[in-house]
Image (tube, one colour):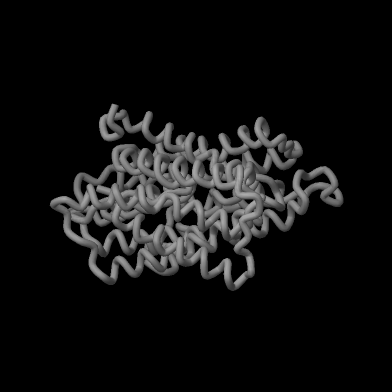
Length: 339
C-alpha cells in the first residue's frame, strides 16, 4: 500500500513508532563518537531524501536560493542538536533523554512569540509549570542526593536535554521559515534535503572543532547508524509528513505521546534502563504538559465563520501551523507543509 493512501492516523502512528527508536539506536551506536553518529545519520539518509526531492520536483517550483541557504543553516543547528543529544543520552539514558527533548514544544512556542510575534495561548501558560516540574523530577533533583535517579549524571542530562530542545526549536523554526519562503509549489522533500545536507557539513565541522570524529569498531556501529538514518530520518519523516496536514490538533496531541513513551518502553526492554518512580512521575508530567500545550484551542477562533470576518480565525490557523511544526519537532522529523 502506498504511503499516501494510508489513513492519516495509521501513518502518523507508524511514523511515531519508527522514530521512537531513535535514541535507542543512537545508544547502540555509541561506540562511535557523537559527531560520527550525527554525521552518519544524516549522510546515509541524504541519497534517499535526494531521490524523494528529485521525484517531487517534477512540475514543482525550485527552491529560491535564500530558502535553500536558510534550510542549510537550519541543518547546522540540527547537527549541533544531534551531537548534544548523544551526550544527553549518555548522562540520563535514551528514554529519559527523549522525554526531556519534548520540551521543544514549549520552546518553539516561546521563540515563535519572541521572534515571529505569534503569541501563544493560555494553554502554553498552563503547560509551562507542569513541564518544568516534570523536568525537575526527571533530572533527579527531587531525590535525596540524587542516589535513586537513573543515569550517570541525571541532573546534567536534564540540563543538556534543555539545550537539545532549544537547538531543535531553532532548527524547526528556521526550516519552517525556509519552507514558507519557498512557496506552496516547492517539492515537500526539498527543504529537508537541503537541511540534511547542511547537517552533514555541520556535523563534520563540529566534529573537527571538537576533535570528536572517532568511529571506533566499525561493526555493528555502522549498521545501527544506517538503520537510524533509514528508520528515523527517512521513513518516519515520510509517514509523519503525509499525515500531519490531515490531522486535527487534538489527534496530533495524542499521537505526540507515542514517540517519548515508546522510547522509554524500548529503552526499558532493549537497554535495561530503569528510571526511578519519581523520574517516571516526571515523564508523566512532561507528557501531560505536551498534550496541554498542543491541544489547547482558542474558543473564539473555533466559532469564527471565516478568516475575513474574524481575525481570531487567522490566528487559529497560524497557531495550528505552529502545532504541526512542534509535533514534527518532537518526533525528530522535518515539519510538513501545512495547508
